[in-house]
Length: 297
Image (cartoon, rainbow, N blue to C red; front, side):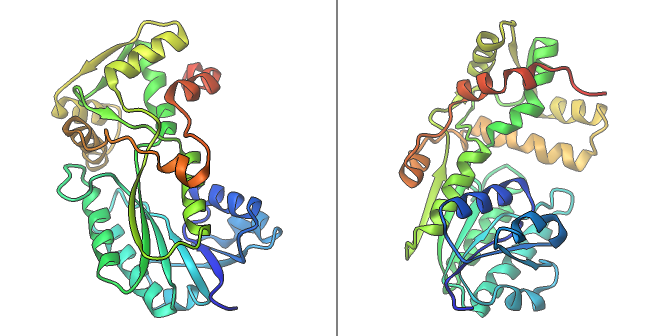
């Protein structure tokens, strides 16, 4: 195989699978997908995708896994429960990309990762630094918070009438996972050279007060935003059974939001895909029934 193939890491996850679908629709390829669980991608093998097993904790095998690839999408690994593991994995991947002769890496990062109070931001900043210190060309896509996370945060607010967080007047430029996938597929398939860093956002930034008002309108229920101290938020998560390290990591996002780190709005999705990103209102309307359903026991 020549270095004409495009590769998607973490391809069995929600974002990775959607990127594969988009690449197939756009007839970009040949396509290589990596995952720790190759059997989970059998449906894509049937469509012509080459699936390879990748273990990001085994650097010696990664270069061979990435062989024959010209452009690669490095989807940030998921290690919320093991601080430092993600950065070690992703640095290993960057070194392996270089060793394998990959030309361009697209990386899914976080807005304003340098000096951010968000606990996982250091992993993203370190990976961006590793890319900058490599010989690789790259596209860094700093994805804002997924609008899809409202499936976690909004149903309790609809049930109680209170949207509780520690975000103060901080705003979020919510963007759907699908729009992030579309931007990633476009960056992977456009053949661009050089280095670029871009914020991937929805069409507007909303404070929690604005989100509560919008949800009140869409669902016809009064929802009040209640901003609490970060310590109270962590305690509330712990009281509901969440392990403290996970609670602190999730609550740290509220620190970054309150600081204004997730408020930037860009036209990246529109420019890369030719289609405007979905607004929060449109997302709520499209998913009204599922969001309004009572949580499963």
